[in-house]
Amino acid sequence: MNHKARAAIAEYRMLKQGDRVAAAVSGGADSVALLDFLCSLTGLGLTVRACHLNHCLRGEESDRDEQLVRTMCREYGVELAVKRVEVKPYAASRKLSVETAARQLRYAFFEEVSRQWDCKIATAHTLSDAAETVLLNLARGTGLAGLCGIPAVRGRIIRPLIGCTRQEVEDYCQRHGLCYVTDSSNLTDAFARNRVRHQVLPQLERENPRAAQAIGRMSALLRQDRDYLEAQAAQAARELARGDGLDAAGAAALHPALRGRVLAGLLARQGIECSAQRVRALEQLLGNRRRVRLTGDWYAVVRRGVLRLEPSAPAGGPIRPRLLPKPGLDGLWVEAAEGKWLHFSVINCADYENFENISSAYLNLVMDYDKITGDILLRARQPGDRIRPAGRGCSKDLRRAFSELALPDRERLCVLADQEGILCAEGVGIDQRVSPDEGSGRLLRIALCGEDGRNQEKCGG
Image (tube, rainbow, N blue to C red; front, top):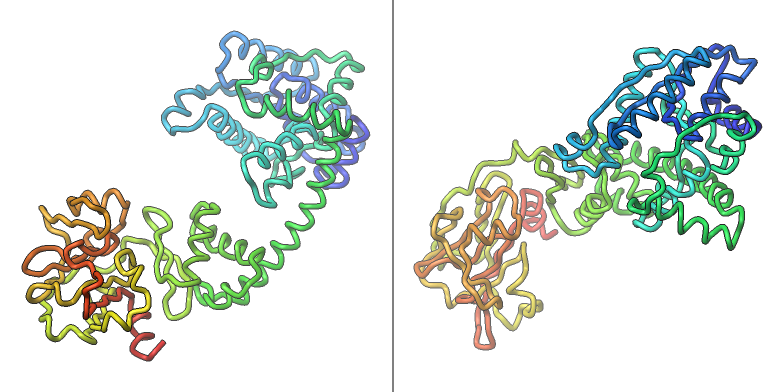
């Protein structure tokens, strides 16, 4: 273990002459070995300290762990920072798992200690921990990043034991006569990581006794690939930058391996958490949509060929009520709200190629023109509005329909009505009453678009 830990420190430049480092010591074998190793490390003139976070999850057992760490640090003459936290109330208040909450509190504590002592933090993650992490990520579904394992260095966090297996660490403790405690929660299979540790990895080691090392080599190679792709994506992002956005056509033309990273970078610059779903939404936006909601506070839009992320608050005002005479609908452009336009066209049913899809289109609503009674009123939803969505066989309160579909900016959703009631509602579709059928002759097509869409259609785009 000693040799591998020294090699990791050198390879990843974890420590230099005169550094200050605090070992995160839980009392388990890995962290006890780490502290002993750092205290025995010669030639660098290190200032070694320790820190311990009591999660207060196991009652007397947690207190026992804390006491062992205090005793060890006193014997080694190492300054110790201790903090007690109540993980369960923290997890409940934020709707987190206990494991996630404990991790958040642990790294927040490391940050406090790092600032207080102006030091690096050494954690006792091993090669076995890294292999388990890769297997967990693989089982849950992951991209390249999830297969890269636990990084040896992340900011001021260093992991000198990242090249050592758990068995090698325990052998080190035995050879040096080190006392440590065993966390009882590590013995149960109640947690996913424990199941991987007790069941999955041992099965792989029956096939290859050095499975953990093999996974480590794979992760090292994938980290090289990841670093290269991220560098290429950063270069592509610089070339596609258009102010605070990206050239949409250029982004769409990128190889998927770069495009996803470029779009993830766009999210990160606005502080929006990246997810596969949000990246896919942006990719779809590049293809054939004009606007997509990313979070409760942010939209992505393509305007004048530039993909941008915009806060939802500054969106245009509500729908402007307008009475639209039926005879004048063909070719009519109407600004329903700021940045939102409707285009009406009357066409022969025989000329409409997408007849099978006319009742479900979202931005291209089509209804039977001759079933419309009188002129059309463009407005927002009103209390008591009901619609019978075509093909659904039921009537719905429009407010409830908007809610069930989780449609955003409901005061900006267009509703069209004639003398008999609702004709169609944005995001919901047309009413069964005006649904085209085999006897339909003329159709009214309603295209909903933003300012860019209006300009493109008027120019023949």
